[in-house]
Length: 57
Image (tube, rainbow, N blue to C red):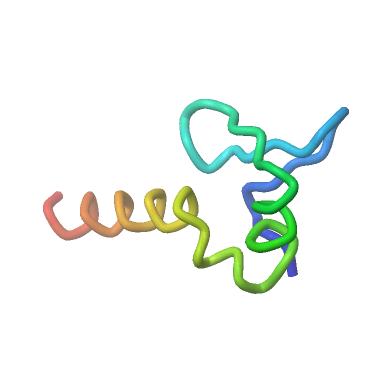
């Protein structure tokens, strides 16, 4: 299972943040292309921000 924020064009890109991020080879192998993508700092930040907005709005 890969990260839902990972896209593939000419190269892999992460859309978790408001700016495109191009993960390194290590990040692709460690997070993006595995079930462990939930440990990725970008993935965690997006979901944490959504949680905080839901709690305080």
